[in-house]
Image 1 (cartoon, one colour):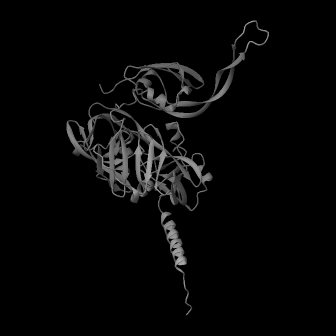
Image 2 (image 1 turned 90 degrees about the horizontal axis):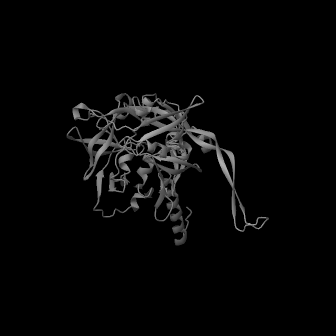
Length: 451
């Protein structure tokens, strides 16, 4: 038998190497923050109540929707992104979500590297969806390449500061709660890797306890599933509308108001609520005790701490809390519809310093008007509510908006345009549109349907 002697120094070195290797192997299966504080801040964009964060996938910088309602990351391959990402180890599966359409074909890929700020995961599964209709970018006016949710929230404590538009990611073992007199902590429940919360709504003169999916990937306020036995039903004041676009297609239903919505001591009044038609939410209702969803237009009114490991959510009111709940009073849903060439005046400015043949001293400004062609964003009507002010005025789906209230539409972002339809009832809207290569002008007034 051969006996090998180790010095103390060599033994410590071997132990350190073994520890590092073991820690690396373990960390491949979760997000780990690569700094000594094990914490990092990442700025995000808040668009239509949705959080868009920068995510690096296999070395490629992309934009993802941060969605508590999804289990595994999804890549939308409408721009052949997966070719650039060089995804591998794939198998074909079918995904099902909201909407009345069929399941969506996707490729499941393993061993992808995800990086968010300084948080990295070395073998992340993802789903690449090739359906060209699943493209959120036109509806948001901003490129969105995918969705991420449960894996990030499971591995790290995620603080969302809607006021400053920053998320803070912290390793759970390093996170320390601060004393908070003005916050509320509520328990989370999980079903199929999705978080649920208990709340209360006041409707039809009744206080009703509800269990809601926390859905940061939805821009609405509150969705409720109608249930006569529980008293969850719309009032007489409602209108039928397009509610959103799910993984399996569009969702339609009633829009109304509830008298109040409460999360422990926090109460919001005259809250927007949607009641999706049952045909569009068959998949969502598999969780029998679920009564609906709590989405971005309520979540943004708080700064939120998600602690999945301890099944706790912490809410603190922010400056959005008292913002009035508005809704689209025009009946128009817009989307980005590519680009168009626009002829613009280009004023060329030249200076004459008076040192030439001129008898007058000083500077002369000579404006030489010329024209240039520029590519500008185009916006199209993609949904039009029946009997809405816009439909009654004669507008149609597919119309391209050229100007609004005598200002060129390309001078606005998509969100700025849409915001104009959320104005006060009675506000006059004048739209110049293009239809079949002809231009038309329409006028209507925003209408309050809840008076």
